Image 1 (cartoon, helix red, strand yellow):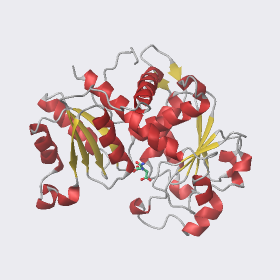
Image 2 (cartoon, protein in one colour):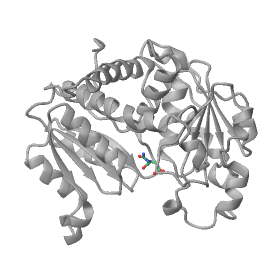
Image 3 (tube, helix red, strand yellow):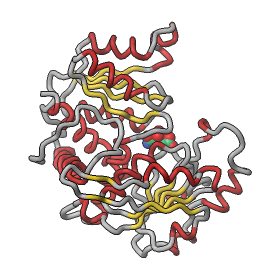
Image 4 (cartoon, helix red, strand yellow):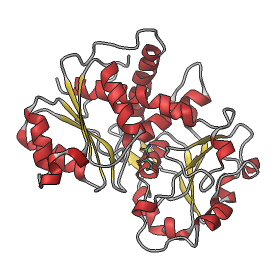
Length: 338
Ligand code: NCD
């Protein structure tokens, strides 16, 4: 387990995370990967603590992954579904959070379709001085830190299975292709990958990748020790320049539920221009690998055969990495409390 100090009480955004923190998370997650490979896949770390999963938006993998991670750490878990909750009777989100607080919740994992909801709840917890940590499990179009961190673990494991390290990401080319505009996954990955020295190439039609998008990432990251890290981000309105020599290609789902107005001529046309196909991967580096956070629109952002090709696709590894990374985050945040 890492010996580096950890002092984040909440994880809402990766915008100011520094390489030493990514390294702490990676090393902690790797040791939990060891636990998960054992016959008894459980440790007593969070015994007696309560982790509440407050998912105000639908989710399959993130929610199950957080629940399993908490259980593997021996925490008690509470699950919440908006459809069958008092929200339908007019209760506010903050009152829902306070209800879970009154039951003795120690850590809250929050997903909401509104950007900023986890941050608002974190502020309220701080105001109340209750020492409850809040972890953002995806808020609107803002961020999805645990997804980017599981992607980081997946990439580092792939680059150097013997001794994974964030150092291996330096100078690697990662193409992120698809609905960047609506993607919290893209935003969190941009922070983490660029902080670790990877070059990120974004590819999408201009309607899903406005030029102004880049502005947020134009300022360098300055670490507490005064190190300046320029974030290397490039925008392409065509697919091939992004794929050229790419070491990794991350396809994103077209988020139809977040699209207001007509941003694309048709899904067929999108696939013709930006769909990841076997043929197009010939432009990438010889050992290229594919990632997708899921859920997938098969045949739209990526072909079905690529998704299922174990030599090229890291998708199942991403899901597996998710449990170890979320164990690491809950462990580190649980520790930051005391
Ligand atoms: C993503 C999400 O919900 O932000 N999925 C996930 O958490 N694995 C991406 C998406 O919805 O397309």
